[in-house]
Amino acid sequence: MAATLAQKLVAKAAGRASVTPGEIVTCKVDLAMVHDSSGPRRLKPRLERLGAKVWDPSKLVVITDHYLPAYDDESRKIIQIARDWVKEAGVDAFYDAQGICHVVLPERGHLRPGMFAVGGDSHSPTGGAFAAYMFGIGATEMLGVVVTGEIWLKVPHTIAMDFAGALSPGVSAKDIMLFLIGRFGMDGGQYQAVEYRGAAIRALSMQERMTLCNMTAELGGQTGLVASDEVTLKYLGKGEIWDSDFGAPLLAHHRFDASGLAPQVAAPHSPANTRPVTEFQEKVDLAYIGACTGAKLEDLRMAARVLKGKKSRVKLLVAPASLRDQEVAEREGTLGVLTDAGAELLANSCGMCAGYGPNLLAANTVTISTTARNFKGRMGDPNAQVYLASPYTVAASAITGRISDPREHLA
Amino acid sequence: MKAWVLGDNVDTDVIAPGRYMKFGIEEIARHCLESVEPRFAGEVKAGDIVVGGRNFGVGSSREQAPEALKHLGVSALIAESFAGVFYRNAINLGLPAVVCAQAKRINAGDELAVDLERGRIENRTTGETLACEAIPPFLLAIIRDGGLLPHLEKKIARTA
Image (tube, rainbow over all chains, first blue to last red):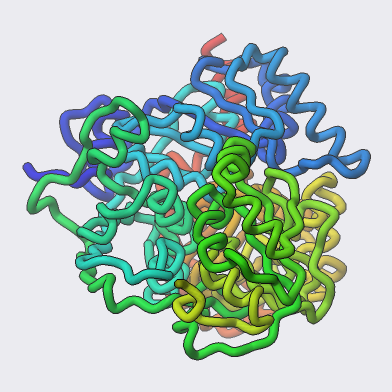
Protein backbone atom coordinates (compact mmCIF):
# COMPACT_ATOMS: atom_id res chain seq x y z
CA MET A 1 0.00 0.00 0.00
CA ALA A 2 1.13 3.52 -0.75
CA ALA A 3 2.82 5.10 2.30
CA THR A 4 3.83 8.62 3.25
CA LEU A 5 7.44 9.56 3.92
CA ALA A 6 6.57 9.84 7.64
CA GLN A 7 5.04 6.34 7.68
CA LYS A 8 8.09 4.87 5.94
CA LEU A 9 10.52 6.51 8.37
CA VAL A 10 8.52 5.43 11.42
CA ALA A 11 8.02 1.88 10.08
CA LYS A 12 11.76 1.50 9.59
CA ALA A 13 12.48 2.71 13.14
CA ALA A 14 9.77 0.45 14.55
CA GLY A 15 11.14 -2.57 12.67
CA ARG A 16 7.89 -3.02 10.81
CA ALA A 17 6.97 -3.48 7.15
CA SER A 18 4.29 -0.81 7.46
CA VAL A 19 2.52 1.28 10.08
CA THR A 20 -0.93 2.87 10.25
CA PRO A 21 -1.55 6.45 11.38
CA GLY A 22 -2.93 6.51 14.91
CA GLU A 23 -1.36 3.27 16.15
CA ILE A 24 1.21 3.46 18.92
CA VAL A 25 4.62 1.98 18.16
CA THR A 26 8.01 1.82 19.83
CA CYS A 27 10.84 3.17 17.70
CA LYS A 28 14.57 2.62 17.90
CA VAL A 29 16.41 5.93 17.95
CA ASP A 30 19.28 6.34 15.47
CA LEU A 31 20.43 9.64 16.94
CA ALA A 32 19.70 11.81 19.97
CA MET A 33 20.81 15.40 20.31
CA VAL A 34 20.83 17.57 23.43
CA HIS A 35 22.07 21.05 24.26
CA ASP A 36 23.48 22.56 27.44
CA SER A 37 20.11 23.57 28.86
CA SER A 38 18.10 20.39 28.23
CA GLY A 39 21.02 17.97 28.25
CA PRO A 40 23.80 17.12 30.71
CA ARG A 41 22.58 19.31 33.56
CA ARG A 42 19.30 17.41 33.63
CA LEU A 43 20.46 13.98 32.41
CA LYS A 44 23.40 13.55 34.78
CA PRO A 45 21.54 13.54 38.13
CA ARG A 46 18.77 11.33 36.72
CA LEU A 47 21.19 8.80 35.22
CA GLU A 48 22.94 8.68 38.57
CA ARG A 49 19.65 8.09 40.35
CA LEU A 50 18.90 5.18 38.00
CA GLY A 51 22.47 3.88 38.10
CA ALA A 52 22.23 3.76 34.30
CA LYS A 53 24.56 4.60 31.43
CA VAL A 54 24.03 6.08 27.96
CA TRP A 55 22.69 3.26 25.76
CA ASP A 56 25.07 4.06 22.93
CA PRO A 57 27.38 7.08 23.31
CA SER A 58 28.10 7.00 19.56
CA LYS A 59 24.47 7.93 18.91
CA LEU A 60 24.38 10.93 21.23
CA VAL A 61 25.39 14.42 20.11
CA VAL A 62 25.89 17.20 22.67
CA ILE A 63 26.04 20.84 21.57
CA THR A 64 26.40 23.93 23.76
CA ASP A 65 24.38 26.91 22.52
CA HIS A 66 21.89 28.25 25.09
CA TYR A 67 24.12 29.61 27.86
CA LEU A 68 26.90 30.93 25.64
CA PRO A 69 28.72 33.11 26.17
CA ALA A 70 28.43 32.24 29.85
CA TYR A 71 27.92 35.45 31.80
CA ASP A 72 27.36 34.55 35.46
CA ASP A 73 27.91 31.73 37.94
CA GLU A 74 24.76 29.84 36.95
CA SER A 75 25.49 29.86 33.21
CA ARG A 76 29.16 29.01 33.73
CA LYS A 77 28.12 26.04 35.86
CA ILE A 78 25.63 24.78 33.25
CA ILE A 79 28.29 24.90 30.51
CA GLN A 80 30.89 23.27 32.75
CA ILE A 81 28.53 20.39 33.57
CA ALA A 82 28.19 19.75 29.81
CA ARG A 83 31.96 19.81 29.27
CA ASP A 84 32.64 17.43 32.16
CA TRP A 85 29.76 15.08 31.48
CA VAL A 86 30.59 14.31 27.84
CA LYS A 87 33.98 12.96 28.98
CA GLU A 88 32.39 10.93 31.76
CA ALA A 89 29.70 9.52 29.44
CA GLY A 90 32.10 8.79 26.58
CA VAL A 91 30.36 11.10 24.10
CA ASP A 92 32.74 12.00 21.26
CA ALA A 93 30.33 14.16 19.27
CA PHE A 94 30.57 17.26 21.46
CA TYR A 95 30.42 20.65 19.77
CA ASP A 96 31.28 23.39 22.21
CA ALA A 97 30.59 26.99 21.18
CA GLN A 98 30.33 26.00 17.51
CA GLY A 99 26.84 27.37 16.97
CA ILE A 100 23.18 26.51 17.44
CA CYS A 101 22.45 22.79 17.72
CA HIS A 102 19.93 22.56 14.86
CA VAL A 103 22.43 24.10 12.46
CA VAL A 104 25.58 22.41 13.76
CA LEU A 105 24.02 18.91 13.70
CA PRO A 106 23.59 18.65 9.92
CA GLU A 107 26.58 20.89 9.22
CA ARG A 108 28.80 18.25 10.86
CA GLY A 109 27.19 15.42 8.91
CA HIS A 110 25.14 13.76 11.63
CA LEU A 111 21.86 13.62 9.68
CA ARG A 112 21.06 11.36 6.75
CA PRO A 113 17.83 10.57 4.93
CA GLY A 114 15.99 7.62 6.52
CA MET A 115 17.08 8.29 10.11
CA PHE A 116 14.85 8.45 13.16
CA ALA A 117 16.12 11.06 15.60
CA VAL A 118 15.07 13.01 18.67
CA GLY A 119 16.34 16.30 20.04
CA GLY A 120 16.06 17.93 23.44
CA ASP A 121 14.68 21.11 21.93
CA SER A 122 11.37 22.04 20.33
CA HIS A 123 12.99 23.13 17.07
CA SER A 124 14.33 19.63 16.45
CA PRO A 125 11.97 19.12 13.46
CA THR A 126 14.68 21.08 11.60
CA GLY A 127 16.27 17.68 10.92
CA GLY A 128 13.28 16.76 8.75
CA ALA A 129 14.80 18.86 5.97
CA PHE A 130 17.09 15.86 5.43
CA ALA A 131 14.18 13.41 5.13
CA ALA A 132 14.92 12.20 8.65
CA TYR A 133 12.09 11.83 11.17
CA MET A 134 13.19 14.19 13.94
CA PHE A 135 11.20 15.79 16.72
CA GLY A 136 11.65 17.56 20.04
CA ILE A 137 11.18 16.02 23.48
CA GLY A 138 11.70 17.14 27.07
CA ALA A 139 14.59 16.19 29.32
CA THR A 140 12.90 13.35 31.21
CA GLU A 141 11.76 11.74 27.98
CA MET A 142 15.31 12.21 26.68
CA LEU A 143 16.48 10.35 29.76
CA GLY A 144 14.22 7.48 28.69
CA VAL A 145 15.82 7.51 25.21
CA VAL A 146 19.33 7.77 26.59
CA VAL A 147 18.73 4.76 28.89
CA THR A 148 16.72 2.52 26.53
CA GLY A 149 17.49 3.76 23.00
CA GLU A 150 13.76 3.72 22.30
CA ILE A 151 10.73 5.99 22.35
CA TRP A 152 6.99 5.55 21.85
CA LEU A 153 5.21 7.32 19.04
CA LYS A 154 1.67 7.63 17.80
CA VAL A 155 2.14 7.09 14.07
CA PRO A 156 1.39 10.48 12.53
CA HIS A 157 -0.92 11.37 9.72
CA THR A 158 0.65 13.57 7.06
CA ILE A 159 -0.48 17.06 6.15
CA ALA A 160 0.98 18.06 2.77
CA MET A 161 1.82 21.71 2.12
CA ASP A 162 2.25 21.88 -1.62
CA PHE A 163 3.78 25.00 -3.17
CA ALA A 164 3.70 25.17 -6.97
CA GLY A 165 5.50 27.87 -8.95
CA ALA A 166 8.50 29.81 -7.68
CA LEU A 167 9.03 32.28 -4.84
CA SER A 168 9.43 35.90 -5.98
CA PRO A 169 12.71 37.72 -5.30
CA GLY A 170 12.77 38.90 -1.68
CA VAL A 171 10.46 36.10 -0.51
CA SER A 172 11.87 33.16 1.44
CA ALA A 173 11.15 29.99 3.42
CA LYS A 174 10.48 32.14 6.49
CA ASP A 175 7.65 33.88 4.63
CA ILE A 176 6.17 30.51 3.67
CA MET A 177 6.15 29.48 7.31
CA LEU A 178 4.77 32.73 8.72
CA PHE A 179 2.06 32.54 6.07
CA LEU A 180 1.17 28.93 6.97
CA ILE A 181 1.19 29.61 10.73
CA GLY A 182 -1.03 32.65 10.18
CA ARG A 183 -3.34 30.63 7.97
CA PHE A 184 -3.63 27.44 10.04
CA GLY A 185 -2.72 28.63 13.54
CA MET A 186 -0.15 27.40 16.00
CA ASP A 187 -1.96 24.08 16.28
CA GLY A 188 -2.55 23.74 12.53
CA GLY A 189 -0.05 20.89 12.39
CA GLN A 190 -2.16 18.92 14.91
CA TYR A 191 1.05 17.25 16.17
CA GLN A 192 1.15 15.25 12.92
CA ALA A 193 3.85 15.17 10.23
CA VAL A 194 3.85 18.18 7.91
CA GLU A 195 5.40 17.44 4.52
CA TYR A 196 6.51 20.32 2.31
CA ARG A 197 6.43 19.58 -1.40
CA GLY A 198 6.03 21.13 -4.83
CA ALA A 199 8.29 22.91 -7.29
CA ALA A 200 8.89 25.91 -5.03
CA ILE A 201 10.10 23.64 -2.20
CA ARG A 202 12.33 21.57 -4.53
CA ALA A 203 13.98 24.83 -5.61
CA LEU A 204 15.02 25.67 -2.02
CA SER A 205 18.54 25.16 -0.67
CA MET A 206 19.06 22.84 2.30
CA GLN A 207 19.27 25.71 4.79
CA GLU A 208 16.01 27.16 3.48
CA ARG A 209 14.39 23.73 3.82
CA MET A 210 15.72 23.68 7.39
CA THR A 211 13.87 26.93 8.05
CA LEU A 212 10.62 25.31 6.85
CA CYS A 213 11.03 22.25 9.01
CA ASN A 214 12.31 24.30 11.97
CA MET A 215 9.18 26.44 12.16
CA THR A 216 6.95 23.40 11.90
CA ALA A 217 7.29 23.71 15.69
CA GLU A 218 5.30 26.98 15.54
CA LEU A 219 2.83 25.36 13.13
CA GLY A 220 2.21 22.65 15.75
CA GLY A 221 3.46 19.66 13.77
CA GLN A 222 5.43 16.90 15.47
CA THR A 223 7.89 17.05 12.62
CA GLY A 224 8.32 18.79 9.29
CA LEU A 225 9.62 16.80 6.35
CA VAL A 226 11.06 17.41 2.91
CA ALA A 227 11.73 14.35 0.73
CA SER A 228 15.39 13.87 -0.15
CA ASP A 229 16.42 14.70 -3.70
CA GLU A 230 19.49 15.73 -5.66
CA VAL A 231 19.80 18.92 -3.55
CA THR A 232 19.95 16.82 -0.37
CA LEU A 233 22.42 14.33 -1.79
CA LYS A 234 24.64 17.08 -3.16
CA TYR A 235 24.74 18.80 0.24
CA LEU A 236 25.51 15.54 2.06
CA GLY A 237 27.74 14.04 -0.61
CA LYS A 238 25.82 10.75 -0.19
CA GLY A 239 22.51 9.34 0.99
CA GLU A 240 19.33 7.73 -0.23
CA ILE A 241 16.14 9.07 -1.74
CA TRP A 242 13.26 8.91 0.73
CA ASP A 243 9.90 10.19 -0.48
CA SER A 244 6.17 9.62 -0.09
CA ASP A 245 4.55 7.19 -2.49
CA PHE A 246 2.20 8.60 -5.08
CA GLY A 247 -1.34 8.39 -3.74
CA ALA A 248 -0.31 7.84 -0.10
CA PRO A 249 -3.20 8.83 2.18
CA LEU A 250 -3.01 12.37 3.54
CA LEU A 251 -4.90 14.01 6.39
CA ALA A 252 -4.98 17.16 4.26
CA HIS A 253 -3.38 18.35 1.05
CA HIS A 254 -3.11 22.14 0.87
CA ARG A 255 -2.06 23.62 -2.46
CA PHE A 256 -0.61 27.10 -2.92
CA ASP A 257 0.99 29.12 -5.66
CA ALA A 258 4.35 30.31 -4.33
CA SER A 259 4.62 33.08 -6.92
CA GLY A 260 1.71 34.93 -5.31
CA LEU A 261 3.27 34.99 -1.84
CA ALA A 262 4.31 38.39 -0.43
CA PRO A 263 6.82 38.82 2.42
CA GLN A 264 5.04 38.16 5.73
CA VAL A 265 5.30 39.75 9.17
CA ALA A 266 3.97 38.34 12.47
CA ALA A 267 2.91 41.04 14.93
CA PRO A 268 3.16 40.71 18.73
CA HIS A 269 2.64 38.35 20.53
CA SER A 270 2.13 35.33 18.29
CA PRO A 271 3.74 33.85 15.16
CA ALA A 272 0.16 33.25 14.00
CA ASN A 273 -0.55 36.98 14.03
CA THR A 274 0.67 37.26 10.45
CA ARG A 275 -0.15 39.64 7.60
CA PRO A 276 1.66 40.70 4.41
CA VAL A 277 4.46 43.22 4.99
CA THR A 278 2.57 45.81 2.93
CA GLU A 279 0.10 46.18 5.82
CA PHE A 280 2.79 47.31 8.28
CA GLN A 281 4.70 50.55 8.73
CA GLU A 282 5.51 50.53 12.44
CA LYS A 283 8.71 52.23 13.58
CA VAL A 284 11.33 49.88 15.01
CA ASP A 285 14.10 50.44 17.57
CA LEU A 286 16.06 47.27 16.93
CA ALA A 287 16.65 44.83 14.09
CA TYR A 288 17.79 41.36 15.14
CA ILE A 289 19.19 38.74 12.80
CA GLY A 290 19.74 35.63 14.85
CA ALA A 291 18.63 32.09 15.75
CA CYS A 292 18.57 28.68 14.09
CA THR A 293 15.65 29.79 12.00
CA GLY A 294 17.05 33.15 10.95
CA ALA A 295 20.85 33.50 10.93
CA LYS A 296 22.24 30.62 8.92
CA LEU A 297 24.60 31.39 6.02
CA GLU A 298 21.65 31.62 3.61
CA ASP A 299 19.88 34.03 5.98
CA LEU A 300 22.96 36.23 6.29
CA ARG A 301 23.22 36.29 2.48
CA MET A 302 19.60 37.44 2.19
CA ALA A 303 20.20 40.27 4.65
CA ALA A 304 23.40 41.25 2.83
CA ARG A 305 21.60 41.39 -0.54
CA VAL A 306 19.35 44.11 0.91
CA LEU A 307 21.98 45.90 3.02
CA LYS A 308 24.77 46.06 0.42
CA GLY A 309 26.09 49.62 0.35
CA LYS A 310 23.42 50.80 2.82
CA LYS A 311 23.42 51.86 6.47
CA SER A 312 21.12 50.69 9.19
CA ARG A 313 19.20 53.53 10.83
CA VAL A 314 18.54 51.49 13.95
CA LYS A 315 20.58 49.21 16.17
CA LEU A 316 21.28 46.09 14.10
CA LEU A 317 22.43 42.93 15.87
CA VAL A 318 23.62 39.85 14.01
CA ALA A 319 24.27 36.52 15.75
CA PRO A 320 25.36 34.06 13.01
CA ALA A 321 23.83 30.65 13.72
CA SER A 322 27.10 28.76 13.50
CA LEU A 323 30.79 29.51 13.63
CA ARG A 324 31.30 27.70 10.31
CA ASP A 325 28.57 29.75 8.63
CA GLN A 326 30.13 32.90 10.04
CA GLU A 327 33.55 31.92 8.67
CA VAL A 328 32.14 31.30 5.20
CA ALA A 329 30.19 34.56 5.38
CA GLU A 330 33.38 36.35 6.33
CA ARG A 331 35.44 34.81 3.48
CA GLU A 332 32.86 35.57 0.81
CA GLY A 333 32.26 39.15 2.02
CA THR A 334 28.71 38.69 3.28
CA LEU A 335 29.69 39.49 6.83
CA GLY A 336 31.57 42.60 5.71
CA VAL A 337 28.43 43.92 4.01
CA LEU A 338 26.54 43.52 7.28
CA THR A 339 29.19 45.14 9.48
CA ASP A 340 29.64 47.97 6.95
CA ALA A 341 25.92 48.60 7.30
CA GLY A 342 26.49 49.03 11.03
CA ALA A 343 25.74 45.52 12.29
CA GLU A 344 27.12 44.55 15.66
CA LEU A 345 28.15 40.89 15.81
CA LEU A 346 27.05 38.63 18.66
CA ALA A 347 28.15 35.10 19.58
CA ASN A 348 27.15 32.00 17.60
CA SER A 349 24.48 30.93 20.04
CA CYS A 350 20.75 31.08 20.76
CA GLY A 351 21.33 34.57 22.13
CA MET A 352 18.34 36.82 22.52
CA CYS A 353 15.88 34.47 20.80
CA ALA A 354 15.19 32.38 23.88
CA GLY A 355 15.76 35.12 26.45
CA TYR A 356 18.31 32.94 28.30
CA GLY A 357 21.20 35.38 28.13
CA PRO A 358 22.05 38.78 29.59
CA ASN A 359 20.74 40.74 26.58
CA LEU A 360 17.01 41.20 27.13
CA LEU A 361 14.63 43.57 25.41
CA ALA A 362 13.57 46.54 27.51
CA ALA A 363 9.91 47.49 28.04
CA ASN A 364 8.22 48.98 24.96
CA THR A 365 11.23 48.34 22.71
CA VAL A 366 10.00 47.56 19.20
CA THR A 367 12.07 44.86 17.55
CA ILE A 368 11.90 43.23 14.14
CA SER A 369 13.50 39.84 14.35
CA THR A 370 14.32 36.78 12.23
CA THR A 371 13.64 34.49 15.22
CA ALA A 372 10.83 31.96 15.54
CA ARG A 373 8.68 33.14 18.44
CA ASN A 374 7.37 36.49 19.62
CA PHE A 375 5.54 35.26 22.70
CA LYS A 376 4.93 37.87 25.39
CA GLY A 377 8.10 38.30 27.44
CA ARG A 378 10.12 35.63 25.63
CA MET A 379 12.92 37.97 24.56
CA GLY A 380 12.76 40.22 27.62
CA ASP A 381 10.20 42.55 29.14
CA PRO A 382 6.55 41.44 28.70
CA ASN A 383 5.87 44.85 27.17
CA ALA A 384 8.57 44.55 24.52
CA GLN A 385 7.01 44.35 21.04
CA VAL A 386 8.54 41.75 18.73
CA TYR A 387 7.67 41.44 15.04
CA LEU A 388 8.86 38.32 13.20
CA ALA A 389 10.00 38.47 9.59
CA SER A 390 12.50 37.10 7.08
CA PRO A 391 16.13 38.27 6.95
CA TYR A 392 15.21 40.26 3.80
CA THR A 393 12.43 42.11 5.63
CA VAL A 394 14.46 42.66 8.81
CA ALA A 395 17.31 44.11 6.73
CA ALA A 396 14.96 46.42 4.77
CA SER A 397 13.37 47.59 8.03
CA ALA A 398 16.82 48.32 9.50
CA ILE A 399 17.54 50.65 6.56
CA THR A 400 14.32 52.66 6.91
CA GLY A 401 13.71 52.37 10.65
CA ARG A 402 10.18 51.16 9.87
CA ILE A 403 8.79 47.75 8.95
CA SER A 404 9.48 47.76 5.22
CA ASP A 405 8.92 45.67 2.12
CA PRO A 406 12.30 44.23 1.06
CA ARG A 407 11.21 43.99 -2.57
CA GLU A 408 11.71 47.77 -2.80
CA HIS A 409 15.29 47.44 -1.60
CA LEU A 410 16.54 44.69 -3.87
CA ALA A 411 18.46 45.80 -6.91
CA MET B 1 -9.90 21.18 43.79
CA LYS B 2 -10.19 24.73 42.57
CA ALA B 3 -9.94 25.56 38.88
CA TRP B 4 -7.66 28.27 37.49
CA VAL B 5 -8.92 29.14 34.04
CA LEU B 6 -6.60 30.42 31.32
CA GLY B 7 -7.14 31.05 27.60
CA ASP B 8 -5.95 29.56 24.31
CA ASN B 9 -2.29 29.10 23.36
CA VAL B 10 -0.82 29.50 26.86
CA ASP B 11 2.86 29.19 25.94
CA THR B 12 5.83 27.71 27.74
CA ASP B 13 7.54 31.11 27.91
CA VAL B 14 4.81 32.43 30.18
CA ILE B 15 4.69 29.19 32.19
CA ALA B 16 8.47 28.97 32.64
CA PRO B 17 10.08 32.25 31.49
CA GLY B 18 13.45 31.82 29.76
CA ARG B 19 15.28 34.32 31.91
CA TYR B 20 14.76 32.09 34.98
CA MET B 21 15.60 28.83 33.21
CA LYS B 22 19.14 28.84 34.57
CA PHE B 23 17.80 28.45 38.09
CA GLY B 24 16.27 25.49 39.89
CA ILE B 25 12.55 24.71 39.75
CA GLU B 26 11.75 26.66 42.92
CA GLU B 27 12.80 29.96 41.38
CA ILE B 28 11.21 29.17 37.99
CA ALA B 29 7.92 28.24 39.73
CA ARG B 30 7.89 31.57 41.56
CA HIS B 31 7.51 33.28 38.17
CA CYS B 32 5.12 30.74 36.66
CA LEU B 33 2.44 32.51 34.58
CA GLU B 34 3.37 35.90 36.06
CA SER B 35 2.89 37.82 32.82
CA VAL B 36 -0.68 36.54 32.30
CA GLU B 37 -1.93 35.65 35.82
CA PRO B 38 0.24 37.48 38.37
CA ARG B 39 -1.62 36.05 41.38
CA PHE B 40 -1.12 32.44 40.32
CA ALA B 41 2.23 31.45 41.83
CA GLY B 42 1.41 33.06 45.17
CA GLU B 43 -2.15 31.86 45.57
CA VAL B 44 -2.36 28.43 43.91
CA LYS B 45 -3.11 25.70 46.46
CA ALA B 46 -2.02 22.06 46.51
CA GLY B 47 -4.46 20.06 44.42
CA ASP B 48 -5.69 22.96 42.28
CA ILE B 49 -6.36 22.31 38.62
CA VAL B 50 -5.26 24.48 35.70
CA VAL B 51 -7.72 24.71 32.81
CA GLY B 52 -6.66 25.96 29.40
CA GLY B 53 -8.29 26.38 26.01
CA ARG B 54 -6.72 25.26 22.75
CA ASN B 55 -3.07 24.28 22.36
CA PHE B 56 -2.06 24.55 26.01
CA GLY B 57 1.72 24.56 26.49
CA VAL B 58 2.66 25.66 22.97
CA GLY B 59 6.30 26.46 22.37
CA SER B 60 9.43 25.09 23.94
CA SER B 61 10.28 21.51 24.90
CA ARG B 62 11.45 22.78 28.32
CA GLU B 63 9.88 20.39 30.81
CA GLN B 64 10.31 22.99 33.52
CA ALA B 65 6.94 24.30 32.27
CA PRO B 66 4.84 21.35 33.52
CA GLU B 67 7.40 20.83 36.31
CA ALA B 68 6.77 24.35 37.66
CA LEU B 69 3.01 23.75 37.68
CA LYS B 70 3.51 20.45 39.48
CA HIS B 71 5.95 22.03 41.92
CA LEU B 72 3.30 24.60 42.87
CA GLY B 73 0.91 21.77 43.74
CA VAL B 74 -1.21 21.62 40.58
CA SER B 75 -2.79 18.14 40.51
CA ALA B 76 -4.04 18.05 36.92
CA LEU B 77 -4.24 20.04 33.70
CA ILE B 78 -7.39 20.19 31.60
CA ALA B 79 -7.51 21.73 28.13
CA GLU B 80 -9.38 21.53 24.85
CA SER B 81 -6.05 20.47 23.38
CA PHE B 82 -2.40 20.40 24.38
CA ALA B 83 0.74 21.12 22.38
CA GLY B 84 2.32 17.73 21.65
CA VAL B 85 5.70 18.14 23.37
CA PHE B 86 4.13 19.72 26.45
CA TYR B 87 1.62 16.87 26.73
CA ARG B 88 4.38 14.26 26.66
CA ASN B 89 6.41 16.25 29.21
CA ALA B 90 3.48 16.57 31.62
CA ILE B 91 2.84 12.80 31.56
CA ASN B 92 6.55 12.08 31.89
CA LEU B 93 6.62 14.20 35.05
CA GLY B 94 3.55 12.45 36.45
CA LEU B 95 1.21 15.39 35.94
CA PRO B 96 -2.08 14.26 34.35
CA ALA B 97 -3.01 16.21 31.21
CA VAL B 98 -6.64 15.69 30.32
CA VAL B 99 -8.09 16.58 26.92
CA CYS B 100 -11.66 17.83 27.31
CA ALA B 101 -13.54 19.31 24.35
CA GLN B 102 -15.83 21.15 26.79
CA ALA B 103 -13.04 22.70 28.89
CA LYS B 104 -14.49 26.17 28.22
CA ARG B 105 -17.56 25.24 30.30
CA ILE B 106 -15.37 25.39 33.41
CA ASN B 107 -15.28 28.71 35.29
CA ALA B 108 -12.50 30.08 37.46
CA GLY B 109 -12.92 28.85 41.01
CA ASP B 110 -15.13 25.85 40.14
CA GLU B 111 -14.56 22.78 42.32
CA LEU B 112 -13.53 19.89 40.08
CA ALA B 113 -12.89 16.17 40.49
CA VAL B 114 -11.07 14.40 37.66
CA ASP B 115 -11.58 10.69 37.10
CA LEU B 116 -8.66 9.64 34.90
CA GLU B 117 -9.72 6.00 34.62
CA ARG B 118 -13.21 6.72 33.40
CA GLY B 119 -12.25 9.80 31.45
CA ARG B 120 -14.57 12.33 33.02
CA ILE B 121 -14.58 15.54 35.01
CA GLU B 122 -17.12 16.25 37.69
CA ASN B 123 -17.82 19.96 38.20
CA ARG B 124 -19.05 20.10 41.80
CA THR B 125 -19.90 23.78 41.53
CA THR B 126 -22.23 23.49 38.54
CA GLY B 127 -23.19 19.83 38.97
CA GLU B 128 -22.09 19.11 35.40
CA THR B 129 -20.16 16.05 34.26
CA LEU B 130 -17.81 16.64 31.33
CA ALA B 131 -16.54 13.84 29.13
CA CYS B 132 -12.81 13.82 28.38
CA GLU B 133 -10.46 11.68 26.33
CA ALA B 134 -9.24 8.60 28.17
CA ILE B 135 -5.48 8.49 28.71
CA PRO B 136 -4.01 5.30 27.15
CA PRO B 137 -3.20 2.64 29.80
CA PHE B 138 0.57 2.71 29.18
CA LEU B 139 0.63 6.46 29.88
CA LEU B 140 -1.66 6.07 32.89
CA ALA B 141 0.91 3.61 34.26
CA ILE B 142 3.62 6.30 33.98
CA ILE B 143 1.38 8.84 35.75
CA ARG B 144 0.55 6.36 38.53
CA ASP B 145 4.24 5.72 39.12
CA GLY B 146 4.78 9.46 39.53
CA GLY B 147 6.43 10.01 36.14
CA LEU B 148 8.86 8.36 33.73
CA LEU B 149 11.85 8.50 36.08
CA PRO B 150 10.25 6.45 38.92
CA HIS B 151 8.61 4.31 36.20
CA LEU B 152 12.03 3.48 34.74
CA GLU B 153 13.39 2.96 38.25
CA LYS B 154 10.73 0.29 38.87
CA LYS B 155 11.43 -1.32 35.50
CA ILE B 156 15.17 -1.45 36.13
CA ALA B 157 14.61 -2.88 39.63
CA ARG B 158 12.40 -5.61 38.13
CA THR B 159 15.00 -6.65 35.56
CA ALA B 160 17.93 -6.50 38.01
